[in-house]
Image 1 (cartoon, rainbow, N blue to C red):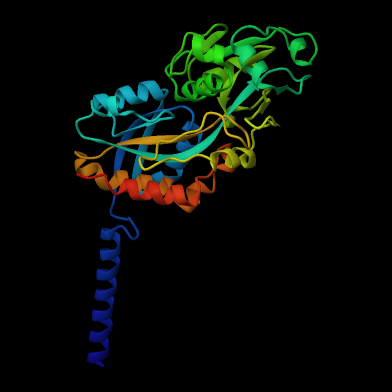
Image 2 (cartoon, rainbow, N blue to C red):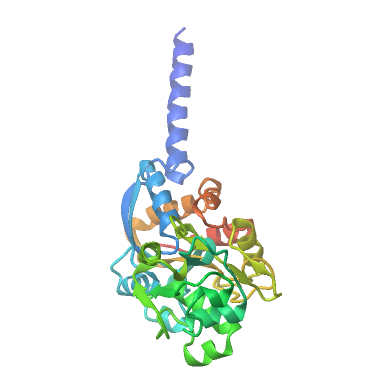
Length: 331
């Protein structure tokens, strides 16, 4: 009888030992706890906030400030956050300013919608019309086949990856835009009023009759609609999960995972990946929490939520490359 009890006791100890080993190896992740501060792009803010809220019970709390890609890169470069986020990947010149090294990880993707507040109009735009609106050359919806109503352009006032990707598309479809305005996180707008963040632009558009601007698709709510936009093959397409996925599928991210395509042939043409910016070294005791957070964001559970929140789930091959990139993060 004693042998039976002793055997059971040994089995129980072995079971505890196994579970502790799995936890310490990250199998269950139960032992990894901490808090992280992050800041950056407003484009993915809606899905990031949802993910971090769901992730908190697992032991890691993430405070994410939606301040725009420009401010996010500045804070990341200054080392005042544990990680940053941007819709425009950092280039070599900017990376050189970060002594700890930079790992850029695609985390989600989405469409930049041309959002407008005019319920009596079903807007379908040619490339020339789209550029004309933001160049200030088209000032009334009657010029677009709708009833007479003044157009009021709203654009970003802060440094923004959404602006970078939107103006990159305008530069790809309009020589005049490329020559006179250009593409960047901040540009000198020919027309319109500014608002901060995707949230601010959406709020402003909802308040202005006839307003038109650009926001991540998840922010097309309330009185706003999304216009159909002409792609490189001439088809006018509205932004949906399916049409954005089609366009994203044509993008070659390249070995550094930072590629893009400002004017795809198929699908909805104004799409982008969005990146988390992590430090390659010097993460200290935050390393495990960072890896656990990023692995959760790239999990099937998290990625499957993207379409319901207005985003596009990353293709499996991109998830695989992103997960590999997280392994570069070290103490």
